Amino acid sequence: MPPRPALLASLCLSALLSLSVTAPAYPASPDPRRVHEAAVVLDTHFDTPANLGRPGWSILDRHDTARDGSQVDLPRMIEGGVDGGFFAVFTPQGARGAAGNAAARDHALYRASEIREMVARHSDRFALALTADDPARILAARKRFVFMSMENGSPVAGDLSLMQAFYRLGVRMIGPVHFRNSDLADSATDTPEWGGLSPAGRSFVAEANRLGMVIDASHASDASLDQMIALSEAPLILSHSGCKDVFDHPRNVDDARLRALAAKGGVIQINAFSAYMVPTPRIPEREAALKDLAKSLGVSGQDMTDGQRKGFTEGRKSIDARWPVPRANIDDFMKHMLHALAVIGPDHVGVSGDFDGGGGIDGLNDVSDYPEITRRLLAAGYSPADINKIWSGNALRVLKTAEAVRDRLQTPKAD
Image (cartoon, rainbow, N blue to C red; front, top):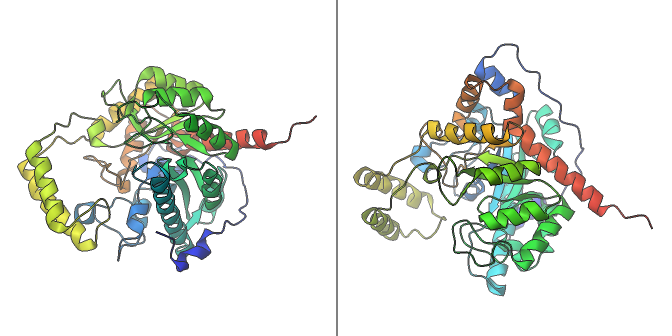
């Protein structure tokens, strides 16, 4: 679907100043809330853009997860001390081939324009971040920063030159694959097809390096991750993943690969997705009831009217009560967090709730709950300096390094 005319003005990139990120002034007191407020708090994977086009939904309003399912908005960001994050241009993996690639491209262009329009409409509250140094400038202006990322490379799979077009729109992090294999890579949750990266996927890695885009290996198969680590000249990020040695799930990463990721300078952002943390049995009756509910409401995919969403939320409550499934809690989240910290240290670990994209666990239901993570990290013996690295310093360092790699690759070589 092409962008609405009202969106087009927001598609032009502006020249932004590049200032160095300065270390926060940490409070002498170990009070967790003060430490949290002193840190720059960044989440590397918000699926919130899926809500931006919902009739009547505004990011400026405080919403309730129990009522409309949303987990990120400005009031809850303020309550949770969240300074910004990567807002995802997510494209479900559809049909592959020319027609499918074109549809994916158009979907992503529209979603990217929605993010930019939101920032433009609320320019007194938000600002687009394009470099690793931009958050410091934006926070000094008393605004929240908005980075853009792309989840699933299908919008660019048919023509990798589109990576530059999306870079110009503001995308600074990009992943090649989602739940199903793409033309670029094997997924962690699909049957291997390429044995890792496809030939186009290898070119994807090189082009991301050339542009200064951070490569996001979340959702990639183990072989895809191994090959991206080996091929990339810049560090990688796992924008929302967990630890396989804590819970064995294909979306999680084992200790050997965590060490390889860290050796390359990369970071894992621990997510809060229940099914990747605790056993979640399949209940055929429950699945059938959910399908019947969606059918009765005329729900197709993720796009719903407000009425459909409310009906689905209410109907699901009775289904959950009749056929409950285990739900992870913040203790489970901290097992993954503390394990990753023990294996690769506080220079290579971060946080993402995977909010508005299926994330959310007991005690970590939306962004307003984030101060509890800081409290638990302090209790585990991590310093305020460590905590600032975990919340943002590590992810911004990865982006800064990707920028340096870009500059080196684009500098003409002397004869």
